[in-house]
Image (cartoon, rainbow, N blue to C red):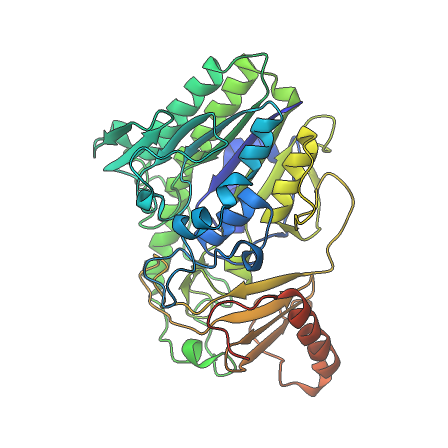
Amino acid sequence: MPDVLLIVTDDQRNRTIDWMDAVGRRIIERGTRFPNGMIPTSVCCPSRASLLTGLFAHSTGVWSNGRSDDIPHTGGWSVFHEAGLEDRTLAVWLQQAGYRTVLIGKYLNGYDDSPAGYVPPGWTTWHAFAEANGAYFDYRLRHSDGSETTHGDGPAAYSTDVLARIGVRTVREAPSYQPLFMMFTPYAVHGPTTPAPRHVGTATVGPFLSPSVNEPDVSDKPPWVAELPTEPIDLITQLRRNTQETLRSVDEAIAALLDAFKQHRDLDDTLVIFTSDNGHLWGEHRLRGKNMSYNVPSRVPLAMRWPGHLEPGSEDRRLALNVDVTATIAEAAGVPLPSEIEGMSLLGSTQREGFALESPVTDGHDGSGQKVARPGYCGYRTHRFVYVRYSGGVEELYDYQEDPFELTNVAQDPGYAEQLAWMRSRTDEECSPRPPGYIE
């Protein structure tokens, strides 16, 4: 059975993977990049719940991060726990198969609501943020024995570095006779997107010039978007620069982990996966943040390496979801999954026609600093089209072949009537049950 190293960043946009040297040289160039890595519900806790279980949000019941959401009891650790999902995670299945299972970093939003000392089943080694979300400085980590350590605000306490040191030590001390599954989940690049002190001022990127940033004409967008003012370009540029600087420490951590696997394990028989929980808008359609159906928050970096199983330097353009990562790891480890699993292994050749996009109502508190409340939605995405229908009936349809930046909503265009009808039908079939609070 191979070792598995799964790296999951927080709120990382797809193309920012190009800023990561170690990821580029040691994962992408030696493995496969999936440019169409996608998230059906583009917000932290639902995405991570899907990654742990191989199930969509409509199956986990984890629809949101919890706490500040308009509809209570739809997300966060407590919903995941009360549904009994911690007893049927990838960690449980791998541990039952003989793996030493390790989580280092962020678990689920709201994990701090768990009882003192609580460690979920399935994890042999546990070093998780004992916070609502995570932090760069001034945070607590809960460990395998239920104890906690407090970390301050000095340079040595920068969380990505602390987690990397724990990860390297864990790899070094893990028994060589037992296969290892490590899930490394730093807080980066989640807002406030704070670089390590040594990386402040090292950014090389300039202003962000995507055609959809501060989209001039948003009259075809839903009312909650059409009413938005433009975003200050200086703010977007600074967020872009902070992201590049914050990713430098993540890239260094990944290099250190790969070195540890090479020195103490068999890196050539290790499945390495790099991805994120959701993307992040930088002013596209005048929006910042996530939890929207548009391309940027739904698309994440995804790359894998496994010598002898994945072709070095290759690209796989299939639609590849977070639930597919779960199925891929299970297949690599030879672990049978429950029949209700909704992911497909990316080690095979099976392709998705499309997938559901779904989310409940949001009050706009997504950590971006921009509050945009919107109704719940159901939708369907294929390679070429994305369709979404919001609670109350507002619809959007975009044709990526003609409009890669989602500038023109063609839901009312008679030339797309047949495609619209088909997308509506697929949405009704796949987005089931409907998100909480969604009204037809």
